[in-house]
Picture (cartoon, rainbow, N blue to C red):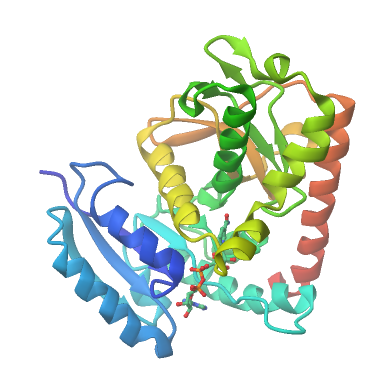
Length: 328
Ligand code: NAI
């Protein structure tokens, strides 16, 4: 049988953690033949709650769960990790400015990026879920690059929830099954500025854009619905979208490690593709094979799309500027 893979999860006592850990332990993320060891990080005051989640994980008697630890020390949590899911983050408190939120998270993700680079496997894959996830991934990557050792391309932010949200909206509008939809893209930041782009999307060989053929719907209904979906869920449920976020994290890592048979949106450090400045963690269409991801090249960007991509890039560049001093 295979050697266990070590999966570190931060914010393990939180809402997303509660939807995520059981699915990782059951084999949904890394495969039904892949044992896992969970390395759970949370703040000191959350250690008791983490122990409670571990009790429940024990009570599932998952055959693939080969071990688990809980800690409040990032150096312990990331030791020899193959995959790090950075879910824990500082939420925006009452009266907190955006810049304060960025720097509070900057402090967390510089520490964690450094701890990953010093302790994890050299080929570790890192997915940041905690918001603002693109910029948090950018910060962790910058801190990791100072240490060396790990692969700078492997620090990702999570855009997959936006991608999946877009697929469901398109399925409902087009009357096609969600599983038939291929080649979806979400460009940019995980925020309402993201640009969900279905110009290339196909369903059983048909163009989804041609099927829908409604630019006003695209601009006035679809994009705002996908962009503001998180807020709509908080409004309806009284709590944020935890299960669907956990599901998207499972999808992202599953496809990265085991391959995708379709384009998938990943927030990855730009290599300059599509004019996005190098290093900016940006939602791109990617294809995964043999454990590697690749940005799909050569897509035509029309004037409308150029405008949308410029808006979401501007937001990311402003976030980057707000944390620049912390990365010196
Ligand atoms: P939550 O508040 O239920 O849990 C967060 C957990 O993180 C808590 O247990 C807290 O103690 C822990 N934590 C805070 N700082 C930490 C640190 N420095 N190290 C380790 N643990 C730490 O929040 P929830 O609902 O689980 O959401 C987590 C994050 O995911 C939030 O930032 C949220 O905005 C984000 N999110 C991202 C989505 C995406 O699509 N990228 C979608 C939905 C949520």
